[in-house]
Image (cartoon, rainbow, N blue to C red; front, side):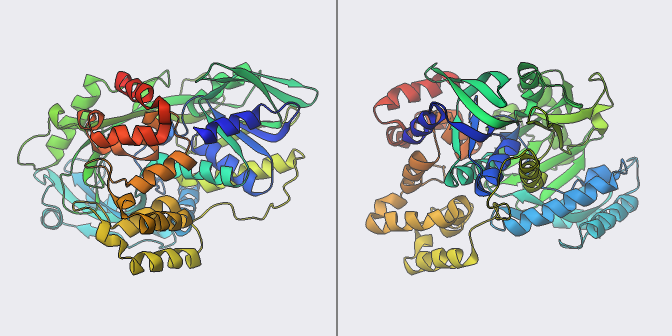
Length: 535
């Protein structure tokens, strides 16, 4: 908690004026803060919940070029998304990885399978041949390649490539927040903006610490509204009129035990005609998604949602026994904020894309970020920095590269040291990947410090919780550097433990109590009970 308390004290400094205050710690806010901070701006970031607490922790974990937008002829959008996907894969090779999508086309589908396959070739062309080439398959080949697929109603299929986040979306987002802090940003979770007023050419934001209840003022030259689904609500608070507004589409995923052996995504068109995925998630499988118009960002998984997903997976896969509700380990549920220009909130919302839009009020020096997705995040960070610069904020290091993994020299140093100490010998049986690979992907160059912890005390390489791929040294590192304010922050977002381990197996795990003591010290019992009460 020391990191959070220290940053709150910095936010409360009397008469201090930030160059920019970012409200919202999802992917749009995280990259805005990371970009601006690295380029030399004095930045603060607040979120009324945890970082990546809503949409950014409930995605399909895909970083894709938007192949589905070919059907609506949005070629310019697909071109930009493919460029962004390729750039993301080059920048984060350990995290954003190519993966094959095996797509089965059913008999009677609105297009013949060969025609859809031609679309994947066009998609590959738009993607500059960056990935492996598409591959058309007969029904027989589909069954040979993936026996779990039910091919009784299949007309044909194909494989093509896109990308996915190997770990999880929330972890990816938090690493941008951590990068922002490394470059001087004062980022704090569980602090909400209750009022925002432009006064004497500065923004005065009344902030409230949602943990202590304390209120204080934060001043900034530029206000960046990156509140995700709540952008419109905060704009009302700040009396901002914008061209865009949000519509919401609810999507859910169910997490179950691994149902396929291959490391590929199975793609189908569900009973409602929309894309449906079976996605590998370490030793588990994520199944979904739904696409339901809703009026509010506050959503939950309903019985109807579960039935839709379970009915489809049981129909589309050839399993020894059907998947039932008792097989569900965890659920993911959130809304996609879809940017609509003009209008009254009524639109053909299914055709709305996830492309982002930034509405600019230059007189008030206010930015509102609408829509967006992980694939395009680097572009969002660059665009926001350029707009803030145009508003008169100096960026002394405007050409500094603010994103990407640590340099290959650092990676080589880590892997060499890890090999010399036989780090992978500590990999627990049943892990989804070697320990060396996992630590580098999560912590980059900071993983070298974890090696030293293990060298000094081999017990630091012990796994604290059964079925959770987290070591004692990782818990201690997380406690110091990752602002875990509530136990859920760690279990759900810094890690994906609650996504791959059932709650009943987590709450009574002896290692959980020890982790709580590391995170919260004397408050550990209170924080553990807070988590138990929330599930």
